[in-house]
Image (cartoon, rainbow, N blue to C red; front, side):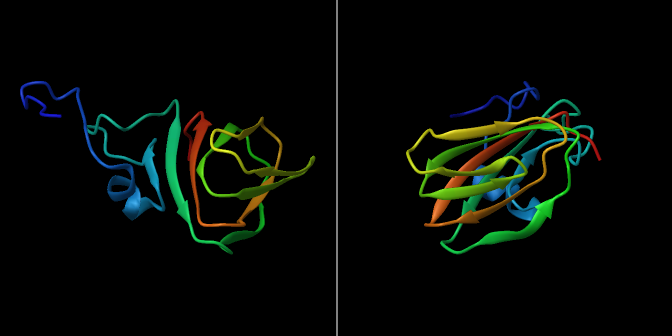
Length: 120
């Protein structure tokens, strides 16, 4: 896609490349104010995980809502309420504030994570 530089409110890129410096996060409060991808409302992450990658220990009880969507692979989520395996392209899990989580890539996996609001 060719973007006319006269329209600064359009951004194109590659999720893997654009999020590389921020562990895959490409939209959220952590970007500079002039960046179109900066948002206090939502965060988006493109996660590429090798088989066996895992988050050891639970991410503390969140004050945000999160959805993890499987693009490819097999990915297990461990929530306070139990575990779920995302195994078919398009499988997802969503949880609200107050639920802690951890995860493990059972196979090489790609997941899209969206959480809101985007806060420090």
